[in-house]
Image (cartoon, rainbow, N blue to C red; front, side, top):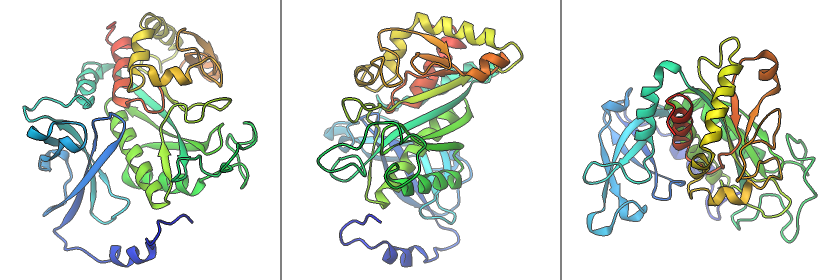
Amino acid sequence: MYHHQGMNKTVLDRYMKLTIPDEKCQAMYVWVDGTGENLRSKTRTLNFVPKDPNELPIWNFDGSSTGQAEGSNSDVYLYPVAIYRDPFRLGRNKLVLCETYKYNKKPTDTNQRWKCLEVMKQAADQHPWFGMEQEYTLLDVDKHPLGWPKNGYPGPQGPYYCGVGTNKVYGRDVVEAHYRACLYTGINISGENAEVMPAQWEFQVGPCEGITMGDDLWMARYLLHRVAEDFNVVVSLDPKPIPGDWNGAGMHTNFSTEAMRQPDGILEIESAIDKMAKVHDKHIQAYDPHGGKDNERRLTGRHETSSIHDFSAGVANRGASIRIPRGVAEERTGYLEDRRPSSNADPYVVSERLVRTICLDEE
C-alpha cells in the first residue's frame, strides 16, 4: 500500500504487541485548534482506567502553537468531555475529546461546544435528533486527488458515485479502516459511500441526540485524519477542492424533533422550514468556519446544490436548501435535510443553530 519512506508498519506492530502494566492507561486528549477546522492531540499516562470524563484530570497545552494563545501567556486548558475506546493502541487505552479554555477560564474562540450544550439542555424535552453526512476528499501527499492522473483529469462524473472497480473508486482501504475504527470506539457511525467526484467519499453519523452529535462527528473526523496518516494519504474537508465541473463537499444535516417523528409530523417539518426561511443569512454565516466564504465556492445552484443567496425547500430535490425525503412526504412523518452546511462546518455550530431556530424560536 502507501508507505512513509523509511517507516515500516510491521516493525511498529512488534512494539504495539507489548503489554502495559494493569493499572496503566494511555489517554490521548483530542481538541479542535485555533483554525476551528483542524484537530490536535497529545497523550498522558493515567494510573487508572477512566469510565467518566469527570474522573480525568484537566490538562493544558501551548496555545501559542495552535493559534489559541499568545506566547507570553500561552497555557490553554483541556477539559475532558467525552471518552472513546482507542482503536490504535487498543486494550484499555482511551481517546478523550476535550473543550479548550483560556487562562482566565473563559472558552477559547474556537470552543463552540459549551454554547451548543446550553442550547441542547434548553431543548432537551423536544428530543432533537441529528444525522450528519460528512463528505471529504482523499489526496495524495502532493495534494493531488488520490488516483487522478498526475497531469490531467479523470473522465466526467457519473460512474464514481457508489462505484466499484479500480478505475472508479480510489482509496477504499482508508474508508474501510476508518469505518471499523469508528465502530470500535463507540461512535454512532451509520454508513459510508463513494461520492460523485472521484476520490471523494462520505460517512454518516447518527441518529444522535443533542450534544452527542458534535462529539461523535469531531471524533470521527479525528479518526479519519489519523487513519489516513497510516496510509500516507491526506484528507481534505475543503468544500470545493477542485474548481470547475466537479461536485463540492458538504455536511448535509438531517434533523428532527419528537413532534416531527409523530403521525402528521410533516406539519412540524413545514413549520420548521418556515422558521428557517426567515434566518437563511444567519444560517449561511454559521455553516462554514469563514462566515459563508467557503460555501460561496460550493453553493452555486449547480452540482446538486442550491444557490447561497436563495432559500428553497422541496421534496426529494437535491438542488434545494432543505430537502424533504420522498418517504417522509408520503408517510407524513420523519425529518428534514439541511443541505447547506459545508464539509468543514463545525457540527456544534450547525446543530446549535438548528435547535435555536426550530426548537427555541430564536432569530
